Length: 215
Image (tube, rainbow, N blue to C red):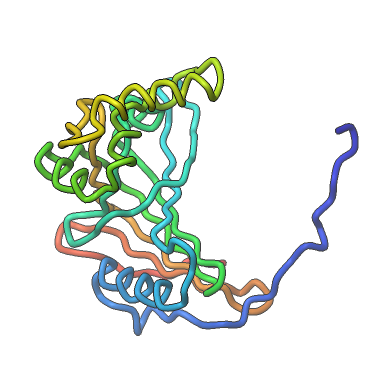
């Protein structure tokens, strides 16, 4: 493609809600719960879809979508292959950024923090809840490694599937969970004429400090 495509006229005015730092929850995880429950009730497809961004050892950022599988006062949990690009990035640099975008509600939540691996027992407990074929896929996965073609993928899957057609699928050595431990949140609510609401929570030594940013 030789010509540049302009999207200058592609815009949306926001008018569904507002966000006031004086009325939000004092705890950002509780504020997240309120918004997440509203997103779930709005029948948004996969409201737990979370874009996570990591940085490679040589400084290149990358982003991908994972599924949030639990959260609480300790942090936010997701599961993946530890040999994937994100796994390799986090092994070298535990800092991470996460983003939830709920366009139907004109909202997004940004989270910045650090990560640590979940213990193997916790990963195994979640792994057992996955459908059998999903367990097979995790065991067969060589995530982020080059492949010859689709047929190679199907052959690897078929081999592992035949081996564990019956009985328990073992938790892969290179698969498990991460806990995102937040240090900062930003809750964004779209407003008319781009005068959006941006409310932040910054972790301090004795809790969370709430603030507001210019849109």
